[in-house]
Image 1 (tube, rainbow, N blue to C red):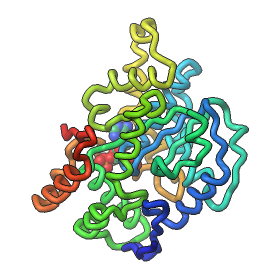
Image 2 (image 1 turned 180 degrees about the vertical axis):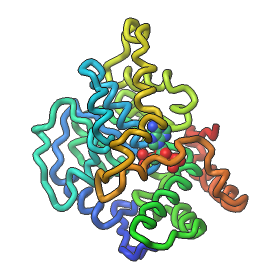
Image 3 (image 1 turned 90 degrees about the vertical axis):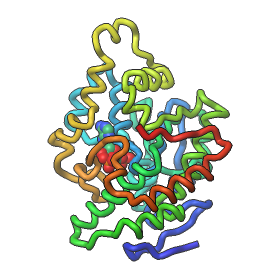
Image 4 (image 1 turned 60 degrees about the vertical axis):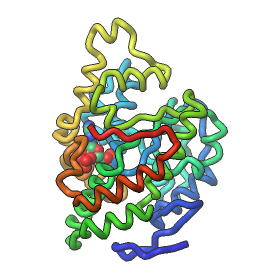
Length: 301
Ligand code: A3P
């Protein structure tokens, strides 16, 4: 199935989810060619749920013994942990990823059931990060308009973008189905998929960071905790620190996105400034219906 978006490109439905045509090519190439290893670490998210932040945290956790600071300060998160389908397999490339250092840190927005089979078979660790749909949507709308402004296109009105999001037409959508798939796998196999929420990360960062390190099988020792390593990593990857890094203030990382576009407010509950009461009612209703019986609940503060 196809639909024409506000940006005048054909969005394709593939295995039940919507894709930009270039991303679809990358997804299919990854499905056909990616050879996963059990040691891989895969971060999966919906766009705008805090991927950039989690990439930095995962990189810092895995590389803390070899001093992550230099690389975190000089390289953008998307270079440290590239997207499988939008970077590595973009432009019809079939890269040789066996040359990357172990563990390979990779990211994806591909829905669980469309992941390359080798990822499912390898048993590698998958970290899934989600965010409440209202903040996720508002972040997406601002991001898209920031990109449009950069190429002198008029902004997309919020009601138009909202309609698409609610219908599940956004990139990698439907949002709710994407989250629910990973949620269910995390319940069935918690050693395989760690399910994190942006809101919980913001509410208690040290606890979440320790949980993440435990899951990745490199827990913080008591000595490290006494030395303040957890706080050091959180400080390094804090919104303010990352946003103000030279590397994130300028340049583009992938797909022509400016690095600065990935940092806006970094808060929970920012949707209040943009959503109308009608929009709130509608999106809350969809969320309630979709999540019913799943055991998943979004936290708003
Ligand atoms: P807002 O638009 O609500 O500010 P992604 O990385 O998946 O594209 O998500 C981008 C969202 O994460 C943006 O949300 C951005 O500001 C926020 N973000 C980026 N870095 C962050 C950090 N270090 N801490 C908290 N939020 C961060």
